Length: 312
Image (cartoon, rainbow, N blue to C red; front, side):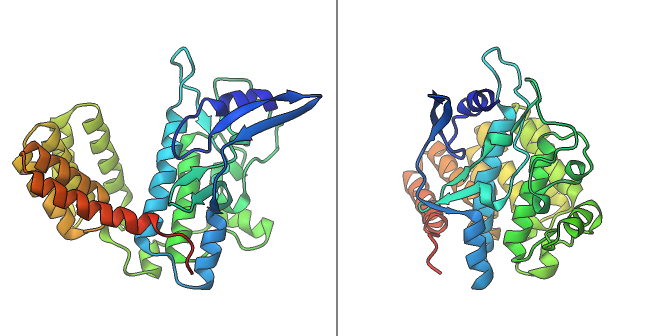
């Protein structure tokens, strides 16, 4: 089982997943060699924040974005024949999210990963995960998939934003009951300065996800329609404005792209995708000075996020 899981994990080559260099058996003992990571796990970082200043929203967003990127890569992983591996981490929690001193997030502990394309050896009734960071389907023994990991990462995000525990009551029984039935308060009720992009309703988030999928698939008209509808419904929703910028960029409408990205930056000057898009649009217009200015502004924000190295 160890070697089977090690082979699966060794396939994962991504900047936001800890690298496995080598694994095997020596004189009856198994070993795995992984990359060395200088830094702290997110549990230690969050604990320090709870004892001092609440983690800045921009920092929390940057950390979760990287974790989500790594999870998405794992969820999309395929075998040598191109078949989906169907990987599910099952234990996304702060202790398994490592933050290096230069601001890179690494997913750890894929040792209990679920691989739907291979044999499963988890005994019936055996829970795999962490009770305070699990989805309802995990505690009731239901079917799990990639959405389970996304839910668990959402728990981590909620706690980083609020500085409070969401489900973990310090008691296993009450924690399980909370996972199954507790009403989740929007983080903005506990922290009013949370930006509008994090306050949107689930239907808006779903529409945004669909729009980005359309854009990635090359359906520019469909993506433009969805993003435009979101901007109409939520004028302050700068990710949708940014999406319109990337639609225009893909369509080589560089002036329109500059207008959209500039509007997004105006609503949130720390939103790195908008700065990056603005730089690309200026390059399309052969405006080197504008591209350099946008890149410089974005780099300053990136340095701000990556410079978060436990100085508190």
